[in-house]
Amino acid sequence: MNGAPPALDVVDETFLAVPPSTVKAAFADPAAWRRYWPDLQLEVYTDRGDEGLRWTVKGALVGTMEVWLEPMLDGTVLHYFLRATPTTGTLRPRDLRREFDRRARAAKAIALELKEILEDGREPGLPPQAHPSPGHRP
Image 1 (cartoon, helix red, strand yellow):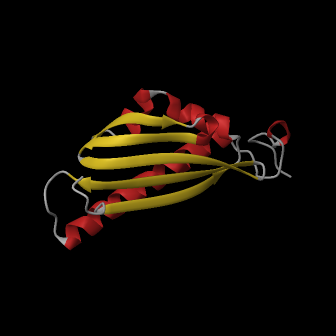
Image 2 (spheres, rainbow, N blue to C red):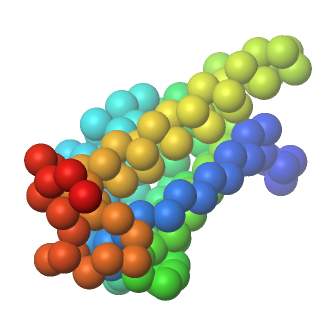
């Protein structure tokens, strides 16, 4: 980047009713990165353990990305930050808004997919072993 602020500054937060180590495991494998962000090449510059990862970003965007995992209540707040500039050159404001919206929706889709998979139906506030079975009706 040339010293100018990034063209895209995407921030997202999602609560997952699982410990940070469980969420971290979902981001540990670089194959997952290629699935989540197929047009980006990521290189870890800080591995914060159960607190998350920070990457440099190349490919369709140039900049940085971070997944910060904050312990909260009985789970984790998954914070996502993407600060980058498209490599396609100068985009019109309308095109930048579209790219921002696309990246923000993709970030939320990743978080909600992880929420569904990792929580496996667990209700917040209930211990993992105490959540009702899928067919159980109160």
